[in-house]
Image (tube, rainbow over all chains, first blue to last red; front, side, top):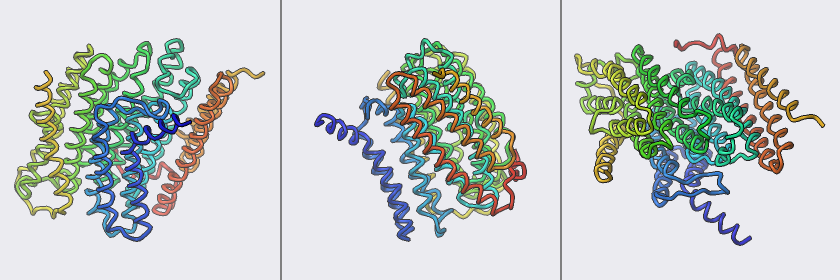
Length: 459
Length: 102
């Protein structure tokens, strides 16, 4: 009995960051009820940063908590270190759009709740955690998209909801067969699927549908451009980062136990190529910058999948995923912050580089980092991902990734080129938006330089 | 004794009907009902596995209760969205909800 209590205390201590996020979300709701919306934003940001600080002592821990249902490892720890600050920055980015509305605290609470869902996904050690994570992050996101309650937002939320609930149901149905074949809901029991490859393949398809939807991987991406476009820019930024990274990491937690006989590496590799290519090609014809970034984030999901496909065959896979997740969070958040400043349409960017030189330069840096130009964060992340793919014997996948990076240069230049045409009047900038892109810019450089320094030191 | 396969077939049929309805029906509320049908077919499959597998009753029942909670939470948010859509446009026909171009 005593030993059990000790286990419980130890497990709860290891989950301190998640508990801190939960308390933050509840606290933001209470502040909302107490009619103190002004306090809600600082409270949420501080709560999320405290949760981030509580994560640092966990670095290097490799263990399971609560009878193997949740994993504390480099993936789940780094997910917290990347996603919690990103969530905090999204709340700051949302502030100018939602201040003085009657539900400000609710939005911050929803951001935090959906972040817990993504964290549950990133460390999932049990089928139920996968289901719970997808549900938690989806429900929060549906409500966030519908938040403005106008025609476009409710339409976007409706499409997102129908798509999300159907793919979610398909996922749980497939997972049920894994439970039936292994007799356990633990992911670590999936190794015994060796003898039941039909059930294993069935479940794999379902997981790829469910997590592919969450990560906006083509061909399960249909909701993404509409949802991002209908939602406030801060919510679009959030959706493109937090649930995506959570779902990709959850996919790794699932496939690490799957027998190779299911052919998962090839299935993931095929999705990676499809997602990269489709995302970049569709982004080439967009006129709306939010939709363009939505398709670009579909392409970026494809790069993430390179790391997933290489998992278990290349030691670089986990570091690559972690670095790319942090890099992606920084540069994508920065790009959305500049969109929040400039406007949603491509023509809003005409002359931005001259009328608002700092924000313009920052946008250029975020976009070339998304392409993967050294020494920026996106370069290191992609370099490691391609290295992992080659190390795992997927050289063709790395070639597809490099070709897609070239293609994506064309996508992002469509935003950059008009920025240095004739200037027009400068957009009015909120200080909080400038703070967000400033921090994202710093992170884009810092992650790039730090990861390269670390690599030189290790190699 | 009814074999396990019989339950699985009924579960799969329910799931197929639900999926078909969710993809084909135009009324948003009916689409939700179809999603509920899909989730309930999951529950049927789960509890039948739990009953037939040795020592899996606890995990299976727990999982089924989680899915019931999932279905309840989803319908709460979904109906809220449908209400918001209906207030804005006086229709819940998913074909008429198409402001955004592809």
